[in-house]
Length: 433
Image (cartoon, rainbow, N blue to C red):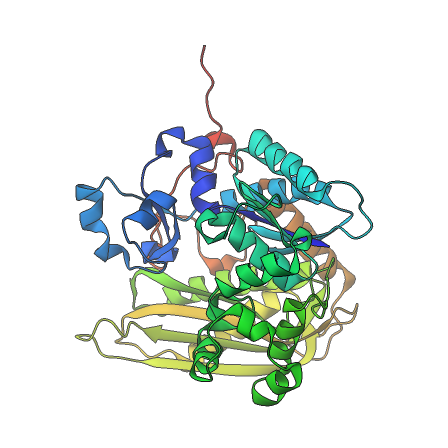
C-alpha cells in the first residue's frame, strides 16, 4: 500500500497559519511579478476564479467580493513544506517527496488500521503546524493519487463506505464494486498521468471515464499512445508500475528564468540579472552534486507590449570541461549576454539554463582552459553556499550581481508579499500578554 499526503490549497494555507484573519476570506496567491493566480482558497474557487487567472481580471473582486491577493512567499512555503514532510514521514517507513505539498509514503508491511494511522498523522500535521491535509491510500501511486482527489471532494463518493472518512480515502479497502463505482465517476482526464491532450484523444476513442481506461488493453494503450499510458492502465488495475523514489532523481537540466518587474534597457542591468540567475542555477547544480558542460542564456522583450519594438535572442556555449563554479558559470552566461544584447529594446525577461549535466568530479578547468581548478575554489563554493543558507540568499554574491540598493529594475514585483514568519528573524510574530 502507498499513501499520498497532500496539503490543501497549500500556499493559501501557509498564509493563513500566521494570519488567522484570512480564514474564511476568498484568497489567492499570485505568481512571480504578481501576474496570475497560482493558488486559490475554497472561497476564491467559489467565486469562479480559475487557476492561472490574470490578476488584472481579479481586481474588481477585491472591491466587490472582498478578495485578498498576496504575492508568493516561496521562502515561507518551502520552510512550511519541510516541516509538513517531516511529520508526514511518520505515516510509513519510506517517503518520496513528490512536490512542495505532496509526498508518497510506502506503507508496505505496516499492519493495523491504516485509516486510523492516517487520521492520527493528519491531526498531528494540523495541530503542530496548522496545515490541513488530505490523505489517499491505494495499492499503486495512481490509485493513491486518485484516492487523495476523492478525499478532497465528498460529493464524488457514491455511497457511505466505511473506508471513506473526512479528508481520508482508502481505496485498498474498497470492494471491487465500490472501486468500479468510484472509477466510473472519475473523468478520464482527471487520472494522474493522462493530461489534457491524451484525455481529448481518449474521449475521441470513446473512453470517457477512469473505469473505461482501467478496462483498456494495456498493449493497445502502449501501441496507440505510449508506455506511460500503459503503466497508467496497469496501475488502475492495482499493478505497481511507477517506481517509488525515496531519493529524487538528479535533474537533467537546471534553469533560472525571471520576468522583470519593470522593463530593462541597459546592458549593466541585464548583467546583474544574468549573474544572479546563473548563481542560483549553479547553487542548485551543486546541491544535487552535478556539473554542467553546456550553458545557455536568453533575453527577450514582452510580446504583450505591442507598441514596443520586439526582440528575442538566445545562444549557448559548450564548456571544454564540466564545472559547478558560480563565477565560471556567470562569466560564461554574461559572455553570451554581450553577444546577443542589442540596445534600443525594453527587455522584459531573461534566463540562464545549465544543460549536459554530469556527476560532479574533483577536476574542473578555469575559463582560460589551461589550469586545473584549484581545491580552494571548490572550498570557496561550499563556503558560499553555507553562508547563504545560514544568513539568507544574497549574503555572499559575485560583484557582477551589482551593489545592494533599495530596488533593482529587474527585480520581480512582490508588492503584496507577507512577512517571512519562519524564515526571517525580523518577521517573527510578537506575542503580547
